[in-house]
Length: 132
Image (cartoon, rainbow, N blue to C red; front, side, top):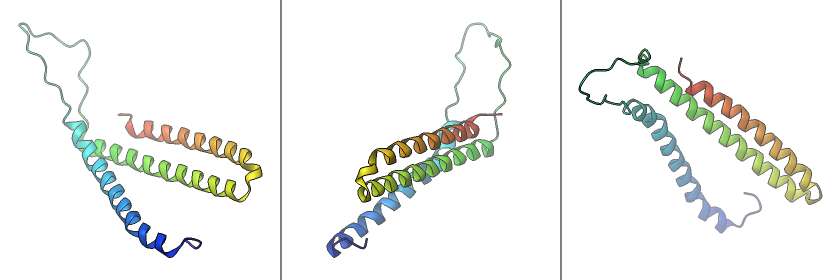
């Protein structure tokens, strides 16, 4: 931070470090906890007087490694997309501050770019989540 007062740098350094650690812990929990939660959601069949045959064939349970890989891939997609949108926003705000007369053009380009990034992110999430 070249133009910031020294007290600002001293005050914000622990906050930035703590926020990075918190974000890392949240992503670690989501990456490791999502497959466990997905596997724990099994349903027990309701007990009835007479057993009823299912109308469709039962779906085979996928191995744990495939589910954990899909959760890990989805987590990476979300992290990448959030980093990209954050960079787009920060650069756009910085550009608007430097040249306020072209703020409308910069904002339009920023929104279009963020929408395209979200479209690619949605496609990647669908690819990660869809079971084969």
